[in-house]
Image 1 (cartoon, chains in turn cyan, blue):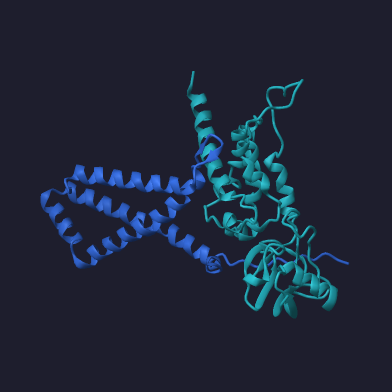
Image 2 (image 1 turned 180 degrees about the vertical axis):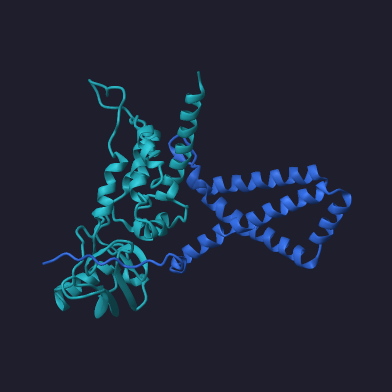
Length: 245
Length: 131
């Protein structure tokens, strides 16, 4: 086990004392197999107990340890020090207000989640005496979108959300698409009425950064582009219905 | 304990300098200016055509001047190399194809786009009598 001395420049912000964030440097003896989260835990346990950050599972499931590492949004449990230079800059996720140190305020996205109507909507009653049946092919159409852990790295990478936070954003739109393409669901047009509106899919200009940084390969950019096509198709369908006598 | 969340400012004019992927995106989107330029050129061409053979010939010879010919070459390469490459790369996201249980690899969709592009180009060249 070899030890590598690394310089971690961590953004600090104390709402009771600081007028704006500042950087604090920590020299950390890192073990080869450590992720950045281990280095932060080392600081918290041995150097500075006042450092605040979120984490829980340390295995890419809880989605709570997302931060900017050398300017890239990433899960700190998934970013290994062996892949990084000796000096690393750690900041809270971009595009969100900073609550304290590396902790951000996620209220905006949490409030938007309900817009996706993330549940199965049925017009016909569900089968009474058995479960819904679904083929593997039908499951594979949306499985990747179920992998989202709400880490919000995609919002941090999205320049559209940075410029205008009224944009519903990648993760919520991908969640809506997950239900839209679920063979058991019948609520697609209901969702599209809302999500194909001004702050929805058409606000996305397809930078694709959300998909590039997604730690779970959810590919929200793909979901959004497919929703644009669905939205346009629904719009034409409604127009043609009006024209019909 | 008091809450006083800090909002980091984002520049509305220089945000795309923040990362390489934003710069690449801007390089792609900036082609809209070239599309605009070509629209103006098409209108000029139509006006020249309406003015009769003399006007048309003046327009054509102007396009062959070193400056304009160079501009055409640069724009063509920019469209063909950068815009086409970038959009074809993104095509599988908007148009995924699933055959049975398996998704068709992105590469297959991109190659199909290039194939179709070459085919349509050859047909156009044939129609125009170039080949």
